[in-house]
Amino acid sequence: MRRGLPDRSHSGDDVRCETEVDTVQLEVKDLVIPGGIIDVWQQLVDCMADTLSVPSVMINRLEPPELEVFRSNVSVENPFPSGTRMQMAGVYCATAAMKRRKLMVSDARADPEWADSPTAEAGIYAYLGYPLLWPDGEVFGTICAVDTKTNRWGRKYEKLLLTIKNVIEMHLMLVNTLHVLDDKNSELAHTLAEVKTLRGLLPICASCKKVRDDEGYWRQIESYVRERSHVEFTHGLCPECAEKLYPGLDV
Image 1: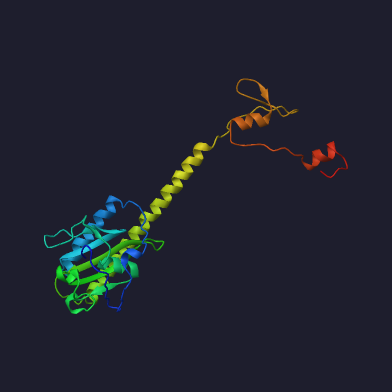
Image 2: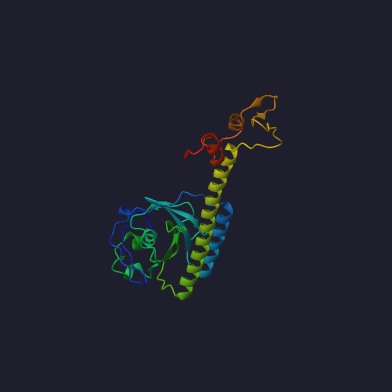
């Protein structure tokens, strides 16, 4: 992962990507990741880097046209500390995200697609990464590990990284759900603020059906209710009244 790397790729599934990264529109939701989840992610990348014995394990967030190293293990050997930003074009992670599948490079120096790339020249020879997706399928970013030497990335590496991917995507689902619930709560609060409720005993004339307000005045029930709610009245005739007032007329 380097600034301005050419768009080349190679994976365990023989994936080849010939499309320029900057021609693809990757929409990323602008949601805030809670601090508690960020702390967990930091623990995960620290643990993974130690377990896999690699210089860098990263959770990256795509913010086209840039990529942000959102969380990365704390180590003097890590060339990509948290907060690092780089252009997406030619970056391993951008390719993994575009293809929405695993991307694996064992040795860029021995790969015709990467041998002459700035990646190899910068000493980043091996990469294993998976895309991270929001619940609706939009790309959040990637989870990846890189190495400065040849790394064949055995099944142990893949299974561990895939497990972390699943955990992070569960967190993204939680963040998305909380966001939806917050929106719904805001809508509900707004709706409740607009509602006016009639409560208590309401004196009403048994004959003319006028009601007595708090000041002792008798008023038409329509005007009384309208002032105390958002109800608007329309007028018509019920069948009984229609027959009484207009006998024989189909109203």
